[in-house]
Every structure is written in structure tokens, then in C-alpha cells.
Length: 571
Image (cartoon, rainbow, N blue to C red; front, side, top):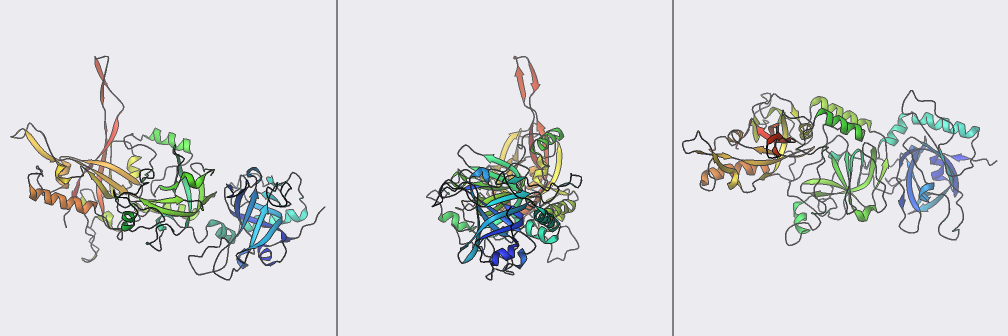
């Protein structure tokens, strides 16, 4: 029986040996992807152990040959190993915290730095083509997810060979690794690397870049996997934070630049990005706005998807273009994953993640710090991370000094009512009333002249009455919603401006136009400006239908939304 001498990761990094044996704990594992050449698949696996923090690259970079954005340390937490082989022989059903044993791991050099390669199974290319690789691995569960589970088995749950050794030394190593998993040093290594950011903190360091975005990682939960007929896929993910808002007219070509001039530079003669129609903005909602979300409907949906619909936090779309993903596996809704090396672009004012040929995703565990932050937001009713801190008081907080007083664009008649998100509005059965912090990103009709409409009114001396009738598109961190603004509430909204034919009255048109302009104008450099509070009511409309030409009965109701108790304040 062979006797194996196992090296720590620090020893493996320093040794001159070309074939080594190691034990480690997995902190991340990619889904296998096809190699650019040949028929093999490749899979990246990150491992750590008690010695990993002693590894010093000497140049402030990490195992992925990427610059540390913090610039504060050159100590690694884990080491990457590149696996090659047929898809069915690589790591499957593997999760963070699993223990891996590797025999005959190859140590080479790439860009003057050590590189670890594990070739598994049949060799497909080179002088050894047709042979079988000598490298083998065994996988063990590192911890129990529930304290009441049976004791973990000593035997591996997956091996690359039907025959494998397992002796007293192996038992000791597995026990030692399981003890290490319970330590804080492993939790720090497994939680996130320095490139992982919440959705709210995605940055573009150089806004002049168009095709070379700063890459970032996300640690998030999958809400939806939307597959389109053209091969395009959108992963809708959530981490409890809010996506940064942009002017609704902003669209760029990708790469992460958020300068409005870029959208013009990358546009054709029509001023539009050529692929905007194929890759538009995408605002996720579990139900259509017109569907009345009853308690039974919500319960059924959550049972089907296996997770609770979050009340706060953006549903962040990650676009996987068909030419990027090829044979990419897709995660399932409800699962926590890591998305690595993502880029970004903006579509109709919505920043989206961009899954490129260099990106990857890996299964993960729930992020406890993100979850704690979400619970804290719920407790505080912090419905928007980008709205002004004191928007809830609508500028009525007397504790503020005169110079610090918030000057709102709107005030409501119900400032004492706690704020809710648009997603919570959609998740509340009609009829219901809410107060929300939102931005206005559009209105219909587009021409303010057409806001004024004339309708029959028997009580009017003329038999007709003018009123303001329009639809506002509202947006917050959780989505967009179209709401009606109609008499008599529209008279309160445009208070001080009598409803009339705006084509005939230049003075009234100018006053309404200025109010509308203030509401829909947003500055890319001032994401905290332009937020308002509005009161929204939901109600049901039952369409009537005739059966057999005799009796009428109510059909399926449609849910509608209308602004009430809100006034636009002129500045």
C-alpha cells in the first residue's frame, strides 16, 4: 500500500516538488465549463487550510492573478486549483466546507508564479493522449447543516477512482479539517474574497471605460432564471441591498461606463443602442401588476420556488448573452450562489450585471452578514438605500436646522404612515393603501399639453369638466410600477393650478410643465436627489361580460393603482 506524505498549502506553495499530495477545505467551486480547445472541461476549485494565510505572493495579488482592490494586504485566504477532465469525472454536488484530498497534484508555473493543475480521468491531448491521468481526488462532507443530523461519515461521498486508500492518517486529516471548519479563519476565507461586493456597492472606477469594465463578484440568492428563445438568459439575483439608480434615459454599450455621453457615442443615427431592443431593462416581479396578489397566491408561489419573497432589496438582473454562455449550467431559484468576474452595463436607467466569457458562477451558502443587514433594514423600515436619509419625514423634522432641512418635491397627507417598497405594494391584496419613497421615471402622455382632459359632468354649468389625467411610472430599489393620477386627487397633486385645456393656457401649461420636469429630471452624479413620497391605493376593477346575450356576470378582476393624498411642491 502506498504511503502518502501530505503537504500544507503553504508547504505546497514553496516546495520544488512537481507532484504533491494535499488536504484542503473547499471555499469555492466553479461549475465545469468547456475548454476553449479540445473536448475537456475545466473547473476551478479554491481550497484553504490552517496555513493558507502564511502564503505571501509578494506583489499584492491573489491566487487568481488579480489586483487586490483594497491594496492593504498581500496575504491570501485560499488557493485556486484548475481541474481538467470529462464533465462527469469532475467535482459534482460539491459545496463550500467540503473537504478534498488530492493525490499527485501537478505543480507548475504560470507568469512566474506557482500553478496547481489536477488532470482527472482519460487524457485527451498531447503525447499521453489515450492514457489515464494519475491525479485522483476524494471528497468528504465537512460539516452538518443541522445539529440534529446523523454524525458525518468518514468515507468520501465522491472519488475519482473506484479504488482508493483510506487509513488512520486519512481519518486524522479529515478530523483535523473538520475542526478547522469550525474556526473563524475558515469562515473568513469562505465568506467572501476582496472582490465580492453587495449590489449597492458595484463601482466603476473609470467612467470613461466602455469595453473594459472593472470586474466584481456577487454573493447572492437566485430569484428567477429567465430563459429566452434566442438563447439569452437572465439570472435575477438578490442580496438585500439596492441597485444604484440612474437617469431613465441612460443606456450604454456595456463595460460599465455610466457617462451619458457614452450612450450617445455608441448609438447609431437614431440615437439608440443597436442591441437595446434585444437587451432591454428587466424588472422582476413574482406577479403581474394587474394580478391581485392574495395570501393564497403568494403562499402557493413561495411553496413552488422554495423561498420567501424578499420585501426589500433589488432584484438584480445578470444578463447571460447566448454567445457568452454556450453550454453553461444554470442555477435553480432559491439557491445561493457566487457570480464571479461580472461586468456591467446600463439599460434604460437600470444597471445590469453582465455575464461574459470570463465570468463564472458557483454554488454557495447563505451569506449571514447580508441576511443580518436585510433583517436590520426591515426592522428600521429602511426601504431605500439611495433616497435621502430623512425622506420619511418629508421635510417636517423640526430637529433639523434650517440649513439641513430636506426640501421635498412632494408632501403627503399621511406622513406618519411607515414607508413601504413597491414590491410590498405588489404583494399586498387589493384594496390597500401605502406610502412609498420613489422616483418618477416617466409619464404618459409624454406631452404635458395632453395632461388636461375634458369629461362630462352633470353638475357643471357647462355640462363638462376639465381635469388632469395621466399615468406616472414610479421606481424604487425593488422595481417599477405604473400608477394613475386622476381627478379629484390630481387636483391636489397639481395644487394651485386649475385644470384646463393646457393647449389654450400657456400660463397653466408652464406651471404644470415645471412640476413635471422637476419630478422626472435625474442627475447621474446625484443619485440621492429626485426622490419623492407618494401615497398609492390599489383597487379592483371587474370587467363585465355577456353570456348568451342575456345575463351579465363579473369576469376576473384587474388590479389598478392610483395616487392619492399627495401634492407636488414647487421650488
